Image (cartoon, rainbow, N blue to C red; front, side):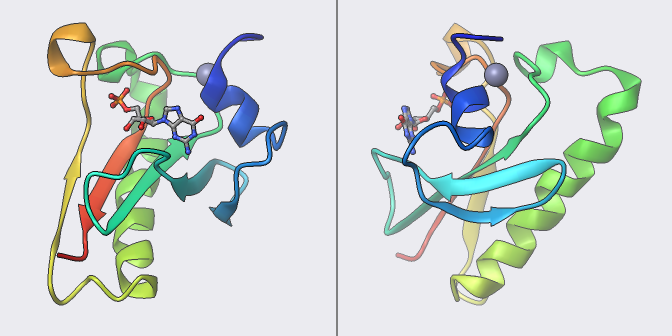
Length: 107
Ligand code: 5GP
Ligand code: ZN
């Protein structure tokens, strides 16, 4: 996926600060935050959107959500609370067509 921005970020090919990385995923700050804390939790595997999930992707989706919970604790927004969401395709507000989980909070 040569021209995919999030593949480039996940592959360490940009100067984006990576807050957390595993063999499966990366976490970085949204460049245009909608809340005091706005993180993107992104699988290294290129999956276009929720619509393209396959049964073999279930484990990575679980890891995205579990990582969100871990990052909420690290960012100290776990007790105040936060929102997790996926935008799906253009009508759902998706503009980067590489799966990512948004975490917003810290109000
Ligand atoms: P979507 O609307 O596709 O669910 O969300 C894509 C998000 O990626 C947007 O909130 C946007 O601000 C963020 N974004 C777009 N380009 C970049 C970038 O180059 N770096 C970072 N860190 N975030 C980006
Ligand atoms: Zn990609």
